[in-house]
Figure 1 (cartoon, rainbow, N blue to C red):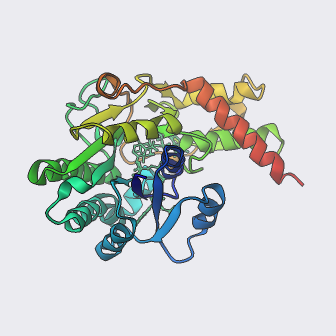
Figure 2: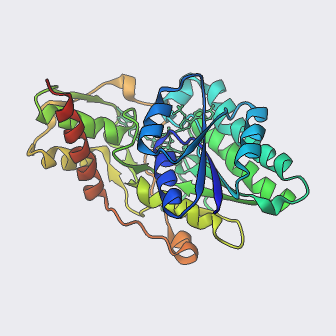
Figure 3: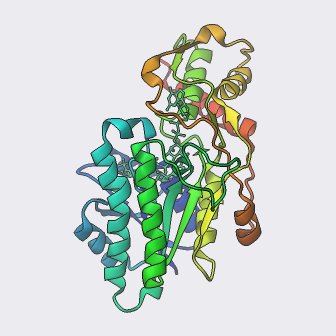
Length: 327
Ligand code: NAP
Ligand code: G4F
């Protein structure tokens, strides 16, 4: 039975990846941070077969202990402070977790393996946010990186450190440059879920309006369930490498609002959305769209859920959740 250790197990991708790996017969270990983390209970309820280990990406010895217990064939480093807006206000913390945390994870694997680095394959969750002020459209693996947030800068560090461990030590370390991926499990701080949750509440008469920032930003949004499949496929290759994972289609926040509101029968949402400068960012990433050609050719990976279906799936899930909260 293959064994996997996942950092960031309580996040959106950690949950989908666990499901995928358990379905393939893996023994799955997940690193859960903090004292009495409330998400541990949700994880235990939804995925009782995942073995939870305590640890933190900023604590190298905790990572070594987790590796020693799990003795994994594959390590997926998904743990991060992942909310871009938060990263400006907490730049040092973001750097410690999202940048240095990758170095800690790589170094822990190297120390754990000793002379035989081939024991463990490593996946790093890199991000399209590294492209920032995009230097070409669409973005591919070779596009110059120009991050526009402390989060993006931290991800660039982790990305190059992963490549460096591959080139210096021959570690099977791959980096997935994933574009935005969403799902009913997406955190409510991210714009897709913020919109679908609010639209569900508006449809049920629980709220009047939603307050947003920049409606012109465009993102290449896919379904998280598809994207974790690409992570797994990367680690099944003979050679480690870097891959862009994206749909190749960008949509604006306005289009997101169009689809979400239309799904609950609202064609004109103009009186239901207000803009607040508090949600604008100090530096914006205007147009992210990826070219997934390499992932398609080498990994045989293609997305299965399109933009409108994804948004409708999330609205339906939020309607269900909000109905359960009604008195
Ligand atoms: P997420 O839902 O925000 O999950 C982040 C995970 O990291 C959570 O489990 C969180 O634990 C954990 N974490 C935070 N600080 C930690 C620390 N100090 N030590 C150990 N774990 C820590 O993120 P996601 O959407 O699943 O994304 C997974 C990874 O892919 C992240 O690295 C993200 O930056 C990257 N990524 C995401 C996207 C996307 O569109 N979703 C795109 C590109 C790259 P708690 O639950 O306890 O907070
Ligand atoms: O949903 P977002 O917060 O996601 P963002 O910044 O693209 O980051 C996500 O995707 C990255 C991949 O590119 C990941 F690496 C990262 O970890 C995270 O998962 O914001 C998307 C866009 C932005 O342009 C933002 O300015 O939506 C715009 N937006 C407009 N109003 C808003 C809002 N974003 C949020 N979160 N909240 C708003 O009210």
